[in-house]
Amino acid sequence: MTITINSKDFDIYIFDNKNNLEIIQEYLKLTGTPYIPPKWAFGYQQSRWSYPDANTIKKVAENFRKKNIPCDAIYMDIDYMKDYKVFTIDEKKFSDFPEFVSEMKNLGFNLVPIIDPGVKIEKGYDVYEEGIEKGYFCKEENGEDFIATVWPGYTHFPDFLNPEVRKWWGEKYKLFTDLGITGFWNDMNEPSIFFVPKTLKEYLRKIDDLKEKEVGLEFFMIKDEAINLSNKREYYQSFYHNTPQGRYTNDELHNLYGYYMTKATVEGFERIIPDKRYLLLSRSSYAGHHRIATIWMGDNMSWWEHMLVNIRMLLSLNMAGFFYTGADIGGFGSNASPELVIRWMQLGVFSPLYRNHSALGTRNQEPWAFDKKTKEILKDTIKLRYALIPYLYSEFFNSINQLKPFIAPLFLYFKDEISKEIEGQFMVGDSIMATPVIKPNARGRFVHLPEVRWLYWNVSDFKERNIRIYEPGDYYIKTELNEIPVFVRENSLIILNEEEINYVDEKPIKELTVIGFVTDNAEFTYFDDDGETYEFNNGKYIKIKISVKKTENGYNYELEKDESEDFVSTIKRIKFEIYDENGNKNIEIFEI
Image 1 (cartoon, rainbow, N blue to C red):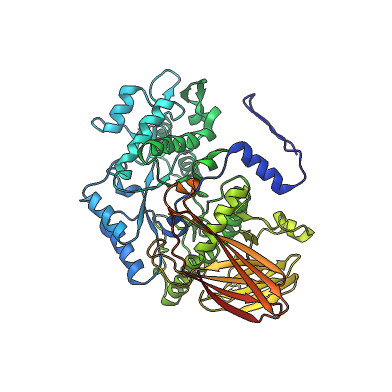
Image 2 (cartoon, helix red, strand yellow):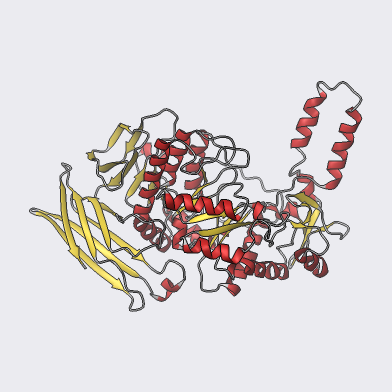
């Protein structure tokens, strides 16, 4: 391996260890424990560029509830702002924003507004005026405020590496947090630059010179130069940050900009919502970002190839500490086919961030945006996700406690040579191996089942069981378009909530279903808390250690509760559905 570093501003750490998991754990001990979002963030989330006004968002929300499709969040892209000005609300589109937020909350929806760093240059605009007065924007080499162009037109960029700027910016989120909004989406924070005024003028001059000519080959110059106006490296070399450590160009600190915008946001939350957990996505980040927030994977496309890229990034980011992350389900750019959205939504069941997002000018990707059959498949797929939330939430906290990737490549669990090469299968917690179908026209896939026996659950309706036991080996698994292949490891357990819900905290969970393939003994620890604060750090939670042991006459079951006096669990019953090596089902129900 060759590592080339372009400056002397670096620290290098070498983890001299042959154990892959221990290397990850040592890295996370160095860089920090991963961030924990609120529980609702494990629900399904719907987004589009753009739902432009309150009425459109209300119709989307009403469709979810009317069609009995679970959903916990709806995103607000740039069109909610007044002329794309950050920390503003367009009053024509949202005539009574506080009432609108309250109405959405009553329906069980969390709103997630987008926040961009570019501040429009406009006299009378309070964010601009304050930034100018206090000198809070990044500078040109001559000391003047750097001008770039993004959505609102000419803008300045806040200098987030300045602690005073971070304090100022973080408190701006009160516009939303005072209304109970705790989900945000920091975008365009590389920072993205469409162009700077000087380069656009040069481009327009070249076009002007061609006006009287017969354009042929020159067309490609016009087209390519327009595309290449964006995000030129020379832009980032021409503006500066004044940091406590000195003055640097953005080019020298580029990957830190998005991280420090996130840091500004989180430092604000620590003051304005100190007891609340938050969902905070960022498009740009740096090592260590995982301890305060997360990222999503940026602007992908509705291409089958990007489903595999989604899995690769999911695994890589988890090994880097981003346990809660994900991609735009269905793809952001281009037009998605119904089959692609179905298969991607099935993959998304096992992605911590489960957000469907699509771009302006592309076809809509809401579950009802296709034909009736597709809608029903997507509805059943989302319902499986909600049934699995007790498992996902419990295993997420277990991963945090152990500093062990929540979504992991097979080689972290199994030592056979084939597992080292596999990218299209992955572990979700300790018990589930996801094997999504990610190729078009496929009604099945090859799977590698390493080392142990596996319970195969072919899911179309989460309340039904289509179960088979497989020995370790390599197989072709038939999987129709409405089916999701789920493998549960031998001597491990998963838990389900089989009561249908519209959103995560709609109603208390009273019964858990425990499913497992047990030939010796298996354990699972169910975890729950209030889902929205940090009181779990003070012992305000419940843990139920669930144990199943195979005996000559059947199975022994044990339940051990660790429950805070301040947090009383709503669980009244646990139903065990345990399979033996022949696929025979054993059912027991315990009142607790």
